[in-house]
Length: 339
Image (cartoon, one colour):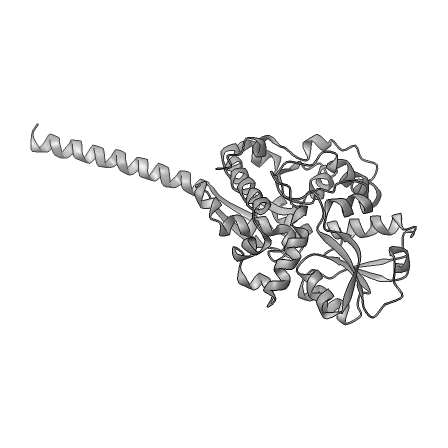
């Protein structure tokens, strides 16, 4: 072969290799997935940051960016706007959105209980039950949020009529605490680690506890699938490979939670999540980690409990026919590779 032919052959080989590398880079870029989390620091959404901390996204070969949004209802809006591909938030958004003609589904179900608690300010010792909240202002993360619907549902079960309580959006964490300290709210629904922070200082006590499956059954009549990874069905159908990799990462994360102590899990979390009280963070996680599913599968009859709550208090859902089978899928978690 002449030197000219050899040069041309080498050039062609280099060109093919460059094309293959470019194609690979494009494929990798296509797998960049942005997920909005409805509050990084909330223990109910712990699997998101834990999966990242354990390196499970990288193991699956996907580039996942986690963004923080304090209220789940706002995270939902980001998904519908196309700003993110997925949301770590409450499953009930999937039901609520179907009533608006939008099909969103839970692809990994993180929890089978809300992980929420109704706290009562120590300034209101007369409040001993939900019925005593008549005429009071109650904090929720946002109007139209999961905490809002759950609060209204439990008030109704306690015999309170519409308008006898006022729900006020106060967010979570520091803003929730400030609202209670300043008397803006007399009670409110929130999650860990906010619960433990306020109980430890004596500023609040627990009125209704929804952190375990048994307590949730007693309060709501059944399991209440809450924290999940939900995505638009059209995106899921068009990106099954990426969704499967996400499911693999999250199912491994749930298995890690199920097989490790709260202290071991806490070590994998960002240290600022402890809010200066690592011991309290671990104690709260130890008490509440039973809320998480062991495998990401939707709990049986859970969607019916959610629909019962929303049918009473969501203007979108009330009176609508909802096909619950289209609000979640177990296709990916049941096919997940766990090792």
